[in-house]
Length: 255
Ligand SMILES: N[C@@H](CCC(=O)N[C@@H](CS)C(=O)NCC(=O)O)C(=O)O
Figure 1 (cartoon, rainbow, N blue to C red):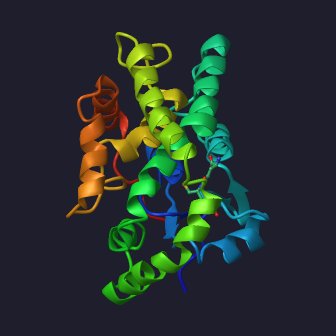
Figure 2: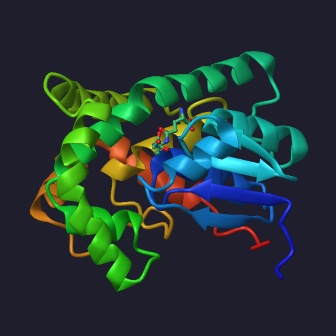
């Protein structure tokens, strides 16, 4: 029997809030196991473990921690080097404020905007979230989407005026990083921090980032191509790509 790892991440493939936790684990070089779950069937087991259904969940020595900001905070305490929090208290406060802004305001809107497109292409949705499963499971999963589409739409508020606000929120996030990145390219001070990690991860679904954990599968349906083309020339999209190229490490050791 395989040993139980000290760190196990319960996650969705390619999901941007989950990407925050993956990035922090990789940045700090924390050996961990990843357990990809399928959105939908994930709900029961995750609720049993944490009392709520959202992932990422990081299990540390058997203790589940949910919420990407809490996960990053836990890792910052257990693995302070390399840091994600600036040493200067004022800079730290600003970096955590930027994380909160993106977690609360921008991340959910980016997701809503992209889902408003992907729900019309169930097989692509299956390729995004069930790419690690067999072709049989992917086909089954894609086949279920049309039946749960309306429930998903109401749960994720995929209706007007929220869809329009979600596209506007995506633009607001890209505008924010364009405006606030300093000469070093970082949002706070002159080194990479939780602010850059959060903004880049939560905007990544709108950008053609090449990192394996966020790469969108091909072929992309026309709606997804249009979604990416819409932001491609925005300087904020260039910032996201640059941040990925410069500061998104490869996979930490598998535990
Ligand atoms: N604020 C949470 C948001 C997490 C979140 O929205 N997770 C989504 C995936 S991106 C999820 O698990 N949705 C399914 C559910 O809530 O049951 C965090 O920062 O971790």
